[in-house]
Figure 1 (cartoon, helix red, strand yellow):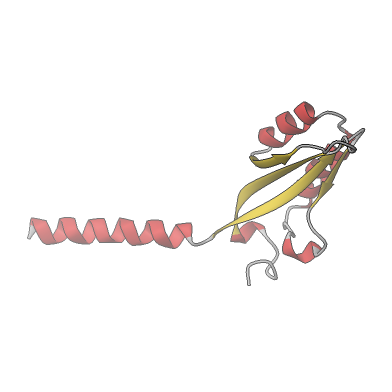
Figure 2 (spheres, rainbow, N blue to C red; figure 1 turned 90 degrees about the vertical axis):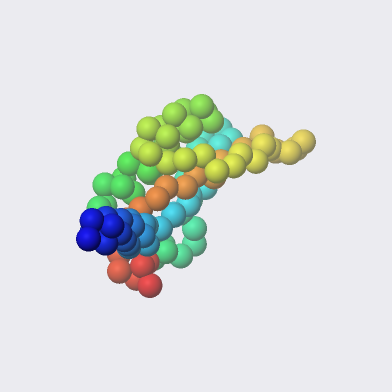
Length: 114
């Protein structure tokens, strides 16, 4: 009897974990830094549409930063993870930094979760 109860308990918590994990989605952004930083969420704004409008306001603050270090410190402070950095070429001084963050689907507009 105890084995069955233990097995049911493990199955319950395991299924709850996987059900919760399925409600997460990664979102990405790109920051170009030359003389000033410029953040981009992609051309289709509906693919990154957080319900909380302060998320976009906080991210747009990046456009006021001027160094890669400031961008990295600010974005990681907001919970974004560094994905990749592309250094400028021989004739360009622009660096491109890619970030991602995991969002719960409930934090995003319904069109995004489809």
